[in-house]
Image (tube, rainbow, N blue to C red):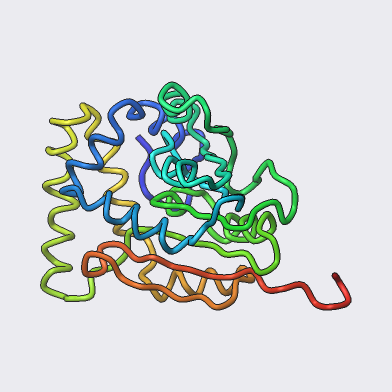
Length: 237
């Protein structure tokens, strides 16, 4: 089982998600105590897509995060590197254009999307900076990026309790629900190693995004980052 570290191998992480695909959504709902639905709603509102907009939903998994966009008349493209996840999603929503793709080498043309969003997937990418640059490339000038990702609780006593839950309570819960506890040990470790709110914002700015801002959800367990691709200079238009 891959460990959460800078040398994680994409094919190993993809295989891990293939194995947990069929019970992934249920397990997330249980271990988050239902908060994942609230986080998903907040992300959709932050993207602020309108009918006719084209949105890339990266790390879309089974498409749960993409469905609200499609139902609202938004042209959404669910993309993930786990074929197992995509297969489960396609069975449920055959109308969605599920696409296999690596976030560091996206199979889309420049400036293809009005917005790009990724929820709980950026920390699983082998090269965070490369992924953020790729998202910038496929977003139109003036378009937006919304990243929903685990972060650092802002209240220190709660942060300690939360860390204990991640490393001790989460695997037994995952074992009861998904039968793949090792996968959730990996996910817990990846959360613990991930940059905090300010750290992720800094990575986004370094990749070329502007107007970077974030807000905390659930006391900082999750942070919602939003940014904009700069408008092209007049001579480039």
